[in-house]
Amino acid sequence: MPVTASSWLRYALLTAVMWGVWGAFTGLPSEHGFPDTLTYVVWALTMIAPAIFALRRSGQGLQRDRRSILLGLAVGMLGAGGQMLLFRAVTLGPTYLIFPIVALSPVVTIVLSLILLGERTGRLGIAGIVLAVISLPLFDYSPEAGAHHYGTWFYLAVVIMLCWGLQAYFIKVANATMGAESIFGYMMLTALMFIPVAFAFTDFSQPINLGFSGPWLAAGIQILNAVGALLLVYAFRYGKAIVVSPLVNAGAPLLTSLISLAIAGSLPGPYKLTGIALALVGALLLALQPE
Image 1 (cartoon, rainbow, N blue to C red):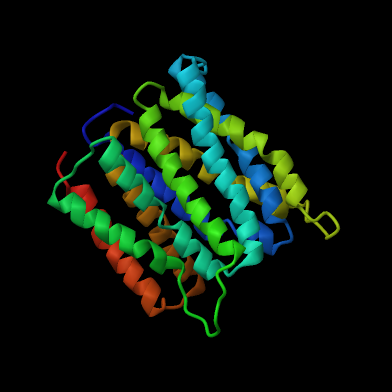
Image 2: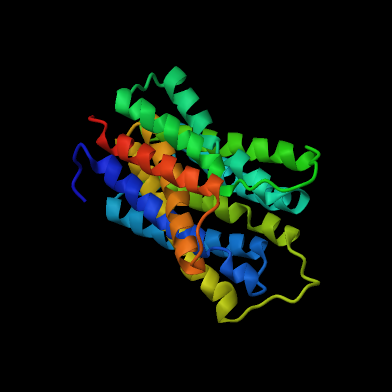
């Protein structure tokens, strides 16, 4: 794909599409008796093919200088580590409160990019960022009766938010001296490193579906996540982190919500409907902001 001023937008939108479709169907293997922890294992394995393809296509091997290794491992560990913590968090607390907290990770990326990278954008971009960030918690939030005690799950959710916000920031930093292909290569390697942890979290005393609707269905769905992650690295290479992060993080759940609602044939609640409207306007403003 030729590099132009709008390359970041194409890659960001492709990422949002990949992750949006992935989000709508990622829960299917679990519904058919395939544990989420083993879905992580499948996801880590699906990272291999895109990583090899990207590295071979670039004509360069994995960068092994000290800076590249440190940044690559930081990006990978923050992403995979956050995913592992998420498995633990959802077993301890309500998902409808955990995911809205995690969804605020672009705030971390934006603050760091503004302060440390000196990134700036125009009025349309600022308005789009604000609307996109506001929309994020609304996609997963649904008020339920009863008091909730903010225990371990709350602190884990905050840590995950920080991990994924920092990961996006380090992806942008790494792109200054590393090829996107090497960054993704390290993301793949660290994802594989966490496979033993995923196995440790798996309850093998329960029946596990190993048929087509288990690992094979998971692989078909998780490859969308893996390819989307590679496209995200390219989006950060050509675009500003303060714009790419909120656009992707608002666009993906927006598409997930629309697909899920279409399948269910029902209308969204007021919170989700508000989130959809804000995300649509925010994404439009971000796309219209001149370079």
